[in-house]
Image 1 (cartoon, rainbow, N blue to C red):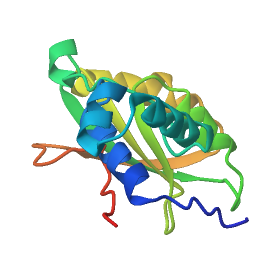
Image 2: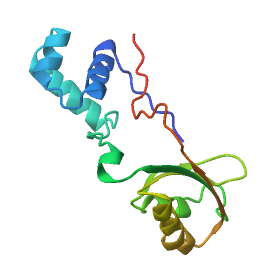
Image 3: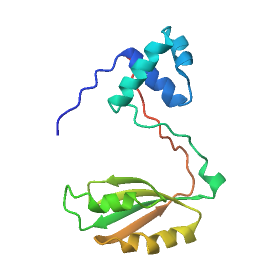
Image 4: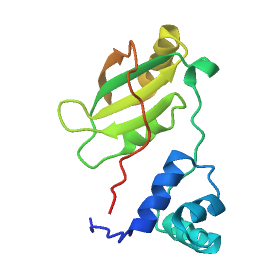
Length: 158
């Protein structure tokens, strides 16, 4: 796999930091913050999107507000060979699955799931996971309390 070079400057990093903190921030506010013209900011944002540096815009919803109270992590052992992502793609199609990670070690995948409660988790296991050929076993960890859960990354300063 080729190494991708992004060549981000301090302005790009600041734009990314501001947008990560508030995806609804408009170009005029970013321009004021940086002392630039809004058209220059728009051009830079479009380039960041084209280069797949900015990949999406999301609203963060409180899962409790929509009845998704139970957070679990499931370690999944599979028959996948290294480099085969077919089971991972099937796991990603399950609506309750928030993240799918192909991991090193005894297990092939680690998935993060949200369900309404333990009954919802059992139903997910029975109706979705048990139907995927190639899953050998699962090991589930239920989260009792979340101390920190962030989707933001650390953006370096230059």
